Amino acid sequence: MENELEINREKIIKYYAWHGYLSCATFVLVCGIGLLMGVVWYVITVTWLPLWVSVLRYSLDEKALRVEKGRLFKSRKTIPLEKITDLELVQGPILRALDMWIIKVQTASTGSQAPEATLIGLVNPEQVREEILAAKTVNLKSG
Image (cartoon, rainbow, N blue to C red; front, side, top):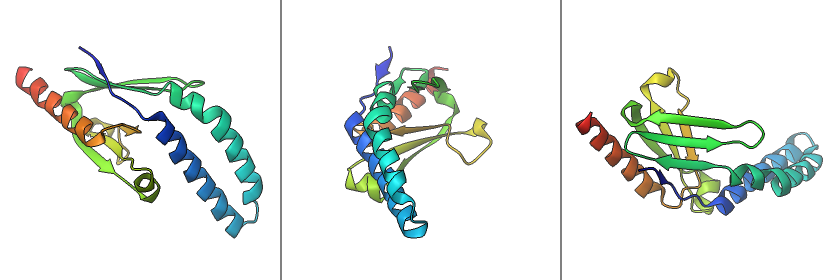
């Protein structure tokens, strides 16, 4: 049975908005072009970002973790539980201010340092991490 993981979409929008605004402020200090970039980022935050977040889906069943994202360029990824080697909880200063965490899903098959998937905006990230690990343990015992 597939279990859709709960996402706090408003916090994701706030995170990317603040991340963009701080990047623009940095450009103001360095290059002086940050004001124009700030206006462009505001338009993106108000229009495109809510659309992108609205189609973001994470789900977990007894065999795999699934990630669906993208409105213009759609992506559907299935990660078999037995391939998962690590679930890293990450929280930088912007995430901490918004009381958010990112879960980086590592697998042995990626062949690089980049995570196989990045889960952002989960309502209970520590609980989701434990659910994935528990499902993986059950999967390994039954398989």
